[in-house]
Length: 330
Image (cartoon, rainbow, N blue to C red; front, side, top):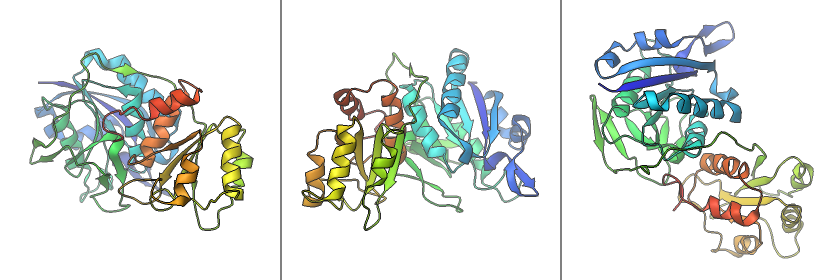
């Protein structure tokens, strides 16, 4: 029987009612007691790393989770992390870079309703996470939710209330868990030399979601505080720019000041292709602009934080960004 470490971080799955609404209250013993069947498939130890609403997650929390995994890596066959749904995709993406190429599974799960509620999804999600964590082919970082097994840096929360809260964006689910069994659709392998661990992230990444009429003056105000701007553009990567426009000048000035600009799309699926329209191709030609293609925003942001902690060299940033990590970019 495999030995799995439960790392609890809070979230709805651990929440209870307060005068101001639901808040994380339950500890690991209380959570595990709600799903006694887990003891039949794994030997489980648990650590309460923190107990917060996932809206409070920061880079430091992601690093703390990575350190916890490192400290316990040799003693366990896998890890299950309970987490709030709001920022779970960011945490899963961050861990795919911080604990890169883990030969042992790192499985995140949570719930749309607290585990103490009668009609909750929490018990099934937690059980399914352990079922996958003990599976012989399990490795790397994944979210298991509503029976889906989703690559960590391909996941996104796409529904605020439904149990079917997470989707795999522009990449198939790698498998499913049904009735206590795992069906693997896509075989995955980690490097046998893994994991490659990192414990630093640079938070100097700003996300700018475009609206019609955006003048980009915000870039003047943030240039000293941020090293990289991720622009959520229109369509396949279009921006309101033309030769000599104020927007183009602001972007060029941010880059000339040493910054990096990454262009993604605010459209949920199918990614960017800035070469299609004049409104995108002109900006793409600027040195210092990177295109995100089919990466999720969560992966773009966390990968940049990981890269910027390693280097400030523009060419090295580009090289690392375009180096595929666990299917994050094609």
